Length: 392
Image (cartoon, rainbow, N blue to C red):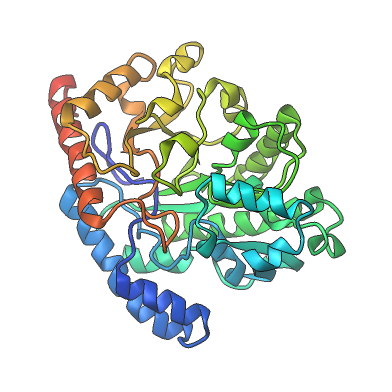
């Protein structure tokens, strides 16, 4: 890990895609662009995302996930044995079609963007998930780099579709072993390449803990997923999967786990709410060095849930809301950090937005200018806090 200042400022992953990149994404999906042709366009978009972040003063950057259609479905084209199922194809597989449609409507789900990565054979890596993203970015910045990957629970829960996947994997647990294997291969490649920070995204933990009675396929946190309805069983299984991915990896790269409560809509009232204490006991079983959590809205509850667990991990502290027009003030950001300082030493606090600014390529939560201003406020707050607490 390259040297970072106190309260390093970073991002969660995604950045709004420019219109010309969205056009290229559509043409590639339609088979009208080769990967090589698409990447020429995507390279320019990545450089633009880097420029925004570096101009804001961010200490650790990402490539903005510019080559991905969203934070997790992009893996389908990287895997043997996987296929993107459209919403129309999924509708033929759900038992309660009317209930499923109503769920999408109530959740303000971006139906036009819903494509479910589905196991349609034995899965293995056809190409790396993100190594190419990291390699290109490393050539164009001297900053430390964060790479986000969908976590093993998210992928297993989403990719196993009854009536399709069970021909090859009789249960979700059978699929999980291969999901763990492909993620370990990817992370090992990224570590060997010198990646500074690898983040596993597991937003569906929120659905499990706050809507634990859900037993059918639903839309949540940008994924179409299905669970048993048993919170403890699901979260213990999720813990085993995360730890199987992270076990005995080489030192030198920071490994983090990101959990939010949904980042697909600006309608805060339809997004999940509840304090982290419902899942914290499970998160602390997982061997991630840093927990990247949202705390910029009341939906996340209070930070005093960490009272019994002071300094037990690093925290990636969400201090601005990526879904709002309002640009948080420096004082508001500093206030959130001061609250975190009651439970974490300064050296254990990273600062970031609650989530990415463009979870779905076709539905960014904010334009680049607002995203830049929000990051700039975090940077200014970090600079002032360093002076107040004592920069090293």
